[in-house]
Length: 162
Length: 204
Image (cartoon, rainbow over the protein chains, first blue to last red):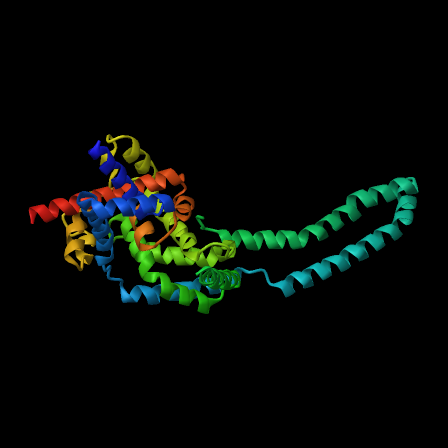
């Protein structure tokens, strides 16, 4: 019976060291510890083991610190270089927009002469130009910035684990 | 007392927010500050995790590079330390898997449920362990051998709880195991230390 009580108190001591004990349990433990030498010894052994963990002083290589900082600077520069250049994206997008607009405008104007030259109905020629020229050029234009961003991101993540 | 707690919590939040903001903007001054502040603790955590000195320096460097690359994923709503240690832990797991020494997780399973996989523990070396070399007090010298022999999962639990002062919840998230498993690892680690310390004392 006494052994059971000690075991319970030892478990409570463990719990209190881990930080899982309630206020009520804390009170019970305090009262028991005040009167029980065995449990006092157990608590003191645990405390000493925990305190001993602070007695380790791991030497760190002073050069490592500098190496890490240098590696960080280098990696930051590499990442910066791999970042998509916003100005370049804007210029490319504007040029693509201009070409797309000009192409669409031109395609709309040449549909009638083209229909006459090919002896095809005007509506059919217009549909053909619209499907084969205007829609693909607009799709390409809209995809351009997305493709640039995706390619920059994949370059950034290359070789990463996490 | 409550006001004091609130002040501390506010200071902590503003500090973590500052770190999150700096990492998002890849602020190099902040990164150097963090390296300075957490260097020793990171080295210590990795030594406890690996039980040896080799590869620690490389892992430290890799960890900081990941912090730079993935800094945007730290939201500043929780403490920085668990996030940093989680990166270090993942890299260590990857390193161990790559070298096929052992898996910390499979080791965790084995050591908690069976004794038959004890051979998965790190190879025993005749050179002094990092714990023996780092012991500065008599009690630490007594513990050095035990720590060396202890399963990495228990060493990790001990350092995170008693040296890094992480909460059980933080540890559970970091290690990726339930709270009960975290507690159980701490109890077992602590029991091993206490028993060995007592034995050594009696032997001495």
